[in-house]
Length: 170
Image (cartoon, rainbow, N blue to C red; front, side):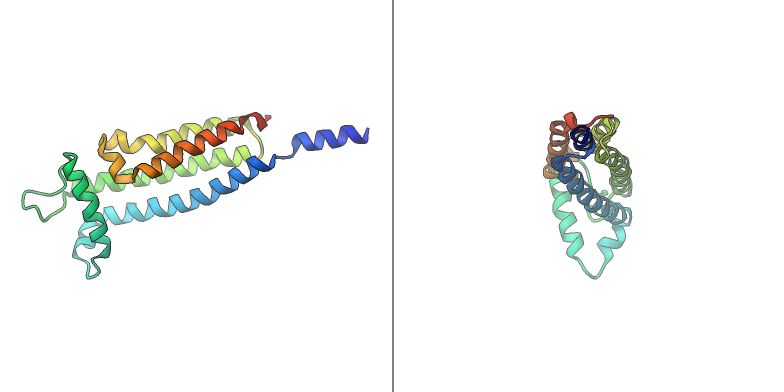
């Protein structure tokens, strides 16, 4: 009888590998949401960034804008000094969408932490959308805006959770 209780308790306990992956995801989500929200605010007030006394943020954005320009995405107005307001607003909007998708994917991770199978489905759908939204909104230029590494990390985490799917029981 005691052995049966131990076996049942072991089956109900979340495996260490799944716990570690969930904890790493929680930390990653916190950082991603902070970064996405920061970019949302930055791109939403791009003219303030351009006119700011501290030009370090603008210099980083300018490099990204030059790469977008090379990919055929027009960044500047006709005077080539003013950023297109509608484009910066679209980029800003993309980042707030990504923040919202982060929260929804975090729900999936929380569900996986308590070993619910539905958690993986929710997580995978919203993380795939998180990786795809830059491409949907900007085509290949989306990879430049968010960075290939960010997209790769997202896809790797989906694959890592897929390896843990067998531990999900309900």
